[in-house]
Length: 269
Image (cartoon, rainbow, N blue to C red):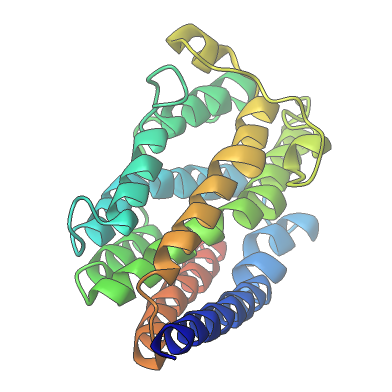
């Protein structure tokens, strides 16, 4: 009888968490920074010139520059051998180049921006809005373990749509504005697409990849894995209503910060 009760509890918790993640995903897709991004809206309406869009793109790069520090902040709440900590470490090792010839993902992105669009994002001074966003996330990582984990999951879960429907299209729009060839093929922005992913084993191969390669690797492979595997590990610690509520609070804190960030960027902050 006791064994049946435990199994029933596990099943109930799993189903509850499944509904929680479904709800959180739906909330994310309705957020302004994704559904009606103010920078993209200004671009489409001709209200933002090429210099303004280039600066918004440069400011975005400050985010992936800080992602490892953000993930490490969440991992500090868990023992090093805890499944959550192990998965977060796998994620930031990938960000640092474990699957791209030792070259950090953000460095490859910067090289592609400079090569294909003449956007120099090597030494970007964070704007007021960008600094506020980064500070909000890093400060949140110092709160409870589940709040920090919720934040980390929000960063990973939002990465695919952020790249697919925001950053990729913004780069192609910028190319159109300055008379350059669009650097990213539409098929590379489809999570369920059939883009043939490159195998990157050396530094030279990392820097030689196209922007389409970079986006497809993240949208189809890297970020999907970060999102899905972290969700699997998070479920292990979401054992009740209180834990779920704290996790969701951290998740929404990041989405709130992203909404404010992009609104600030659209105002030149």
